[in-house]
Length: 418
Image: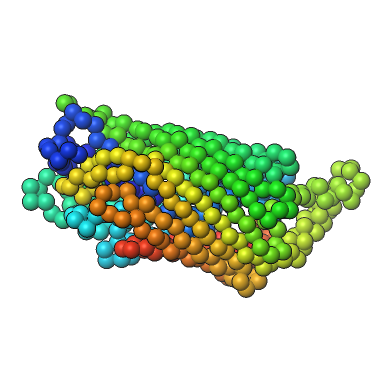
């Protein structure tokens, strides 16, 4: 979720009230993090955020808590783990507009920088995920004749997701839930902190992935979060509001490559050859080699279509980030339909993905905008890091871009080719 700082507080900004009159210091003001351009890992961006049904691994933790129980095709140990990191930059255009502001806005340019770190731990059909996301947004406004507002506002926004999931019916029905914690620091052009706050909410998800079938169905819901900062003497408090979210998704994969492979561990294979008795270290190593060979021999070509309908709570009226103009935002739920496609076009060397999504208009006097996204994974050199990365020791570069009217965001990550 991209951070959309659609409000700042009147007592600092000297802004107008939502009725167009003087700001009322007794009325609470709200910083609202409404739906905007997507932000996340390279695969997520490349697929236009149509990710709820195929959420898995490190990128899936923040999207669907049920993804913690989705074992990847190359995860064949009873105990297993995964780590991942991503970065994205949305500040390339001279008039980059993260917030999709009206043409009359005094905001000249806005930018966003995003980073995430995720970790998974698996035990058979159970999984635990922990992800931390950090985003820094900035907006530069024209100078105000009254001198009441800073010319630049920055928002440092962090979200931590912790979830636990289990795959019922041999992993075919994954259910997951857990808390999400948000923190935010708002600052002016002087680098001083205007305020900081934190809050907690909850999220839950489900993924239905019948074994050996080529489709998935999924849904996720995230509760709203409201955190309050007490006002100064005689002033109303300031609130940070993270809206509720609901997402529904469907994915289908063409080709011989399995989308929902059955979980088969090294221990399972070794015991099948020992008549059920406890296997030796050599037998376990032989079983791992066999599973790796099976994985390498699988069909490489596939064409996956994935879709999602993402709905987020509307925010109502707020004082705007342009510091002087009144902003009226939608009080109705905002919908973002998303569609993505992915394929391994050059076996063992190149994967391509692309898609499109709609960003609903959050502010009066603006229109929603369609985004086009694209991305790729390319296999690089082989290096086992002194034997630590065997058997998957080919490195991978992943790139993604998201473009729309007055907006461009790019993302990159380094990982391992699977």
